[in-house]
Amino acid sequence: MDYQKKELPKKFSMTGWALVASGIVIVVVSYLVNPMRASFNNVIALMFMTGISVGALVLVALEHLSGAVWSTPMRRVSEFLAASIPFVAVLAIPLLFNLQGLFQWTHLDVVKSDVNLQGKTPYLNTGFFIIRYVVFFAVLFLFYLIFTRNSYKQDDTKDQSYTSRNVKFSAGFMPVVAIVLSFLAIDWMMSLSPHWYSTIFGIYYITATLLAGLAATTFAAVSLSEKGYLHSSIGPDHYYSFGALLFGMTNFWAYIAFSQFMLIWYANIPEETTWFIMRWTGGWKYVSIAMIVIRFAIPYFGLLTARAKTDPKRLKIVSIIILAAHLFDMYWLVMPTYSDTALFSFFEIGFPVLITGILIVVFSFQAKKHNLIPIGDPKLQRGLDFHL
Image (cartoon, rainbow, N blue to C red):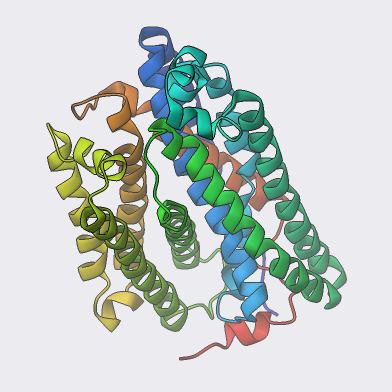
């Protein structure tokens, strides 16, 4: 195959390091000025970055499990994005020292006077919470190592058995990651309001995660392809597949989000409706309306036509909007627990800047070590020849 690896420009890595440095400064200052608000923004950052990194890893597993060929030339992009999973785990460490400031269920005096919270104590307790955090990220990192180790070795050996191994591991990974993401959403976001519950919240976050990973992969893959870092055979048919998936997942997210709202509204149970009432009072009402527009309407109409799905410029713009909407979604899910009114200042800027920098630095490091295309994959030529 006529693939010649091209090194990414040095300014790409330098930009990442600059963003990391700037983000760290803003985050440290925000923690010094208002530790509580910084902690809530830290939770938002944790769930946002989990969405991108774990969502990218899910895309890798989906390709192996489904036997898809169109995505094979771009799969390495998802693998590089998934390499940031260890940094997501590190991002949660400051929060472990401030659990009492974040979670009502950590206060023993509050639990003693609340029968509802007492019933949830076997699950909502500090020790078990930390154990789950360690186990969940260890499992995610283990699967990442397995998938990428086999993929990178295949570049050198051209051994097709590595593909078969990843298919088998993908079959085990999919139910595991669904459980892990559900519990991460319950632990870090739902338990901020420990009396509230929703049986749809897990799939809500799973959908958001897959959409975030897909948007990040689409933006990176299209950008690299346009600049000649991938392969010249990648074209409109591959772009259309990205656009169709983004369009479909946006619709599925809207379906899940509306289902959660409709069922809670219809049942009208106080423990459930309180959560939505918090997001429909004060300034949060406008944030909720903006969620519908940014998270659904703009991506929907932006990718509605077949032509839009093959336009690289349109795909990049919509991907950025989806990633911004994912961050906005995490803000909408978390921050009302902290404040009755919507807040935005430098506190909310630090972590997004830091995360962007980390993703760029990690991607640059991986691109320097490995090929940008899985040149040993037996499906690669079929992927390059893919046509709708």
